[in-house]
Length: 481
Ligand code: NAD
Image (cartoon, rainbow, N blue to C red; front, side, top):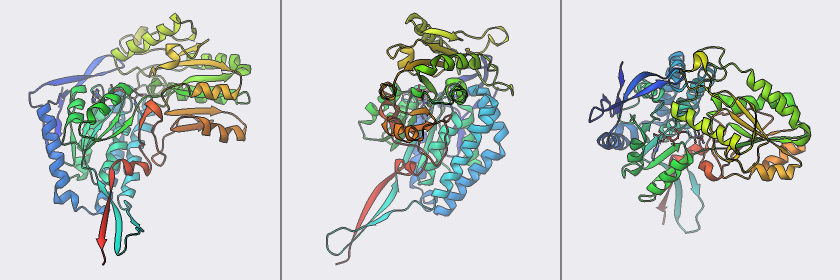
């Protein structure tokens, strides 16, 4: 078995103390690859390489046009290697092939192309100051070395969301993928080098939480962009207080779905099922709390339970699979624990609620689970489960639904199902979430910002908003007197 190595400057190297870890196929629990476990010495070396590259003439003097072409070339290479990348993502993460090949990989390429266009459009402005004889303008300065720390649920597109705008704006990067799913990020780092990214502009450190911690604490890192759990995000903020590092956080979610009395229930069932079980519920924007008007709740629960029960479960490689495995044995146990808490706290199980046995017993498969009779106080209605668990709760009027939808510390995504155009436009303004979908499954597009209110994070990724995340305005005053 080959061991994935670290990329430091232009060298692929073993960890400084030779240590390695393994990553498993969640569909059967078998180890598929080993990867270098970076040490603090490796973190120092990667940050130093990124700093040298940031200050190098090669990178600083690269024209915006050339930088745009470089990003475009990365997108081309992602597409040229799309089948391999999708297979790798499915093998390592478990995601169904239709997700890896139709969403994860194309989205990664699309994001690089989107920011390739921005490389030539990082504009400043001229400010009309009132001091006589001054010409004052602002430019957008890159931040420097960016530590890009990513989670295991969508490894390739999430690293692309960070790396593409970081490079477009002239920064350098140290990538730190999740220890459960490093393989597609290793391949992306190879693609960056093959595309002609100069030495040290993109570095890669594989390994566990300690590698992330060392990057966050490192004084040579100017910015941390982190996607992951809220608890780790809060720790990153505390540690970054020491040097006031710039921090961007995309954290958890507990998305409400409000199904109004006039909703098309069949569309709402299908859309909520896709939104709730996309990537087996391992999505920060997953729909999880279903507030359904009391007049439609029985119909909704009946149809949702039947449809959830009928979804094909299997390894991601199987073309018919809709529900794949959870990412790890540890995560399977966590999800099963939340489901047990639902039953113990009095929720009614409509379907699912158990691990899948038989030929799938070796993998981390959990049946799509629907609960009814859920109250807002129950654990399953409050915490982010990050698995295929859907909780249905009736409501009587829209004011109540909005208050309960907002009754969470998270605020990443919400969805609304209605045929009433006034409700469709007015309700999103009352919902505290970074993105509100109306009659939609969760959609992500490079042109639309992604991020959350409250404990869902700080800042936004994607769209033009990301340019602000990777640049600092700098004013220049010229004396014309
Ligand atoms: P996690 O927070 O445990 O780990 C994420 C990454 O951080 C991994 O690379 C890990 O090694 C590293 N890490 C762990 N502890 C660290 C520390 N103390 N300092 C620095 N780095 C550290 O999260 P996870 O379990 O991999 O991912 C699931 C979580 O990610 C969920 O809560 C989910 O909602 C969130 N998520 C959010 C978004 C979004 O866009 N808002 C997208 C995907 C996932």
